[in-house]
Image 1 (cartoon, rainbow, N blue to C red):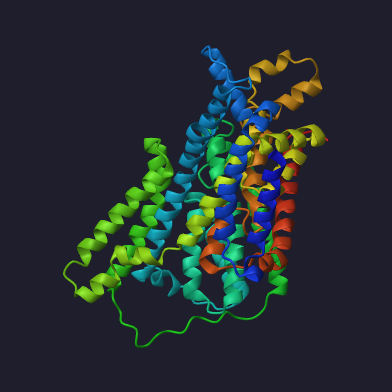
Image 2 (cartoon, rainbow, N blue to C red; image 1 turned 180 degrees about the horizontal axis):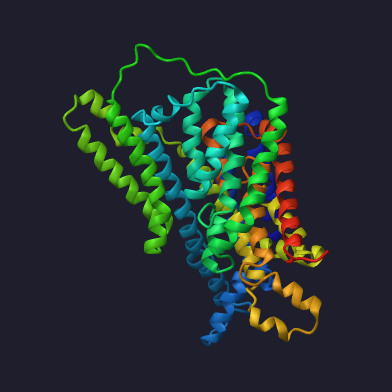
Length: 483
């Protein structure tokens, strides 16, 4: 069953990649593998747990032993323990983590949709006069890069894709710009402690500090975005075609209401990292609080309007336009990855990288490339579990200088952790489904997986390698790594 889980995941991944040729929405195979992997896991629990491949089960059984209970053997009681562990411990734990992402995404998408339906983004789009493709691409990419650091890459992508709908009419041009937004959003999120889920994990875990990650990772991240833009500067020509204005369209909001909803929408999204920092609660709680405030304001400002207008601007009506297939896709793919993580597949993969690559830069680069295929959250979680934070004071007790140098890479703000934040954050841009930002853009604009692979992946790879080279040179110049 351990091998069967891998086979099912790969087949499901292929079906997601071939969404358009198969004419089956990507949410379908995602939900299917998200359920089937847990079925296979349950059927093969005894085999998997007996082999010792699941670190989660090993930890659980050790805790049972500590309390005077046995999790090993061959009786019905042991099988029942294994089933209880999968259903009542692992599924519940992972479902909680997945739900945080889903509610965060649902809240962010709803806020963006409310702002859009109230023509809030028109306040911005009316000020972007240029239609020259490359100039517009530079403006939007730089805006995305810094917005992503302040908000996060997922929320920023949702906002920017909504903006693109107001600026570009042609579908493929919109796809291209949305894809470059994904690249810029992932690059911007990598150097901020609140810009990406993985950097948040490393920041909360104590592997990195705010000042160090900003100082040391911002330039490599900027290079990751700028290098593809420079290439496109010499190859991209022409102007974008703006969506036609609907002359007979009824204007439902006043100029003041449009400005108010834009301010509330942006402020509500910006409030989320502040909420998390101040109250130490999950980000989705702040997102839902922001949504509730914006919802209340819409109820108040529209209460005296005619019923028809009130209904069209009602949040209840707007909710029907939120991309629910994207939510289901997230649910399925994250559930599938959670099953692989619980069963031990990802731990084995991380151990293989450590044993066969050895060099911290190669390990992090490999994790970054893998994050384009597998969700970067469990990969980073696996790396955090594999390598404990080293105590700087204890380095002098190690046997030789080589061991001391290697251990120093794993102290707080060590090279391994900073470079991991960069690679895990930007490596997902290589494939459209390699990051939360990519999945959101794919769901909102129906971007074709194969199209992205042909048009964008090579640019993302060049940017990824260029940024990694810059970080490596920084480490050598500053004397943190010797060649």
